[in-house]
Image 1 (cartoon, helix red, strand yellow):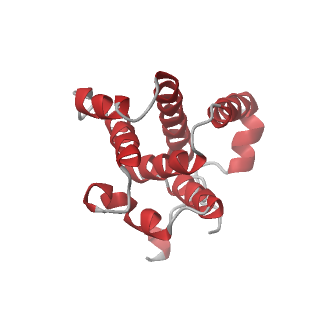
Image 2: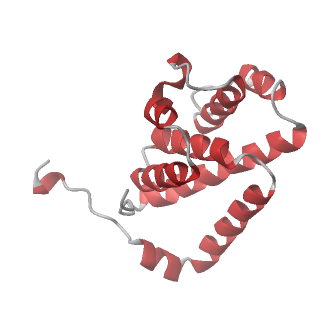
Amino acid sequence: MSDADTVVARLDWAAFEKDAGGVVLALRELGRAVDASGLDKGLCELVKVRVSQLNGCAFCLQYHLNLGRRLGLAALQLDQLACWRDSPAFSSRERAALAWAEALTLQAAHADSDGPYAALQAHFSVAEIANLTAAIGHINAWNRIAGGLRFTPPAP
């Protein structure tokens, strides 16, 4: 990559946190609510990494890869997450969550979410579905902010 191709942050994290502090607090509170819901944190990190891949958000992708590694997620799962449908590394529960995450993230392109929702119902309670859906909305919001403003990704 040449210097002309270097990605430059439009706004850095510190400026965003200073100027949009209320937004940061609200999003952190949503994250705490999802964390307190009892959803498996490893599963949530897989979903957050996958959604960040789909949205092309380098900051969130690296941030959640780092968290996933700290949580002890299998390297094979992180390595093969982009092709989860073709990988034996994922359980049927994880596959249902990933399909739901993709259906919501790519909602405009895939208006029929009945199949992914039916698969979700086979593996998750109503409360888990509600909280997983909130987690997916949460990471999509962060992706639009961090990706749109081109926050510099954290170190691995």
